[in-house]
Image 1: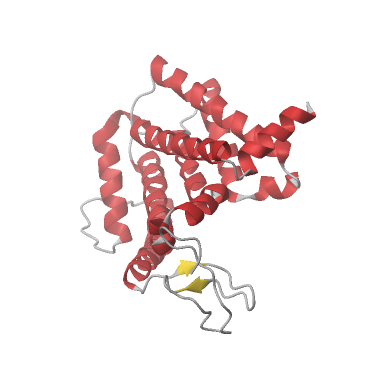
Image 2: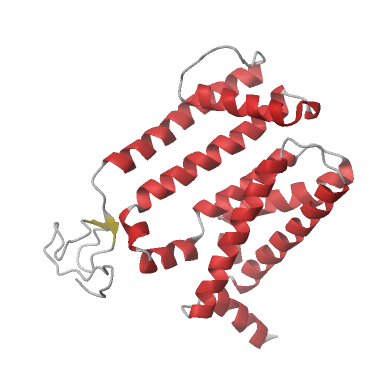
Length: 259
């Protein structure tokens, strides 16, 4: 049992090629699940989609249990945002069919895992110069993407019937983007108190995320690298000294291991 636990820990936290491939496999699985949940959020659930939900739910549950098993601090692991999202997803996918509850929109929270996959970020920072150059913009885009589709699913559940299907989901997406950008065409509105509060939330949070993405795109690119002397963690891609303290930096560059 100890050998199995050690092997799983090495897969999740190790630096070997096998461990990196395993973690990249996890992110591919995460991407497939979020795309599947988005694609099926507005579709009537039949036998095939129910089976697919259960399969995805069990795989997510196995990953969740594995991370809990190898965690040094299980309480802290449970409070991580992507762990809480996984718990919600597992409950909504595996238990909702038992109660015939329309909780499908909660499964889109699985997308939060794409934002906070620490090991993936560590590997990408080490192996991808493109990611290091544009990390802030990539993460801001993912944040905005997840917010749009989580909110769209909530709007769909509140304002549309399941019978509206895909056209209803497109209308919910249209309303979300129009509200987020404060365009305000007014052809689709939420008239209830809950709907109005949701609209305010979309405008406030959505605009903030949109501005964050614009700032990350148009600001000069910086690479995340912690200075060993002063701790400054943003530097120019070609920096050889820290602008704050003058410490020599060894930022990895494409085709080179030192700067």
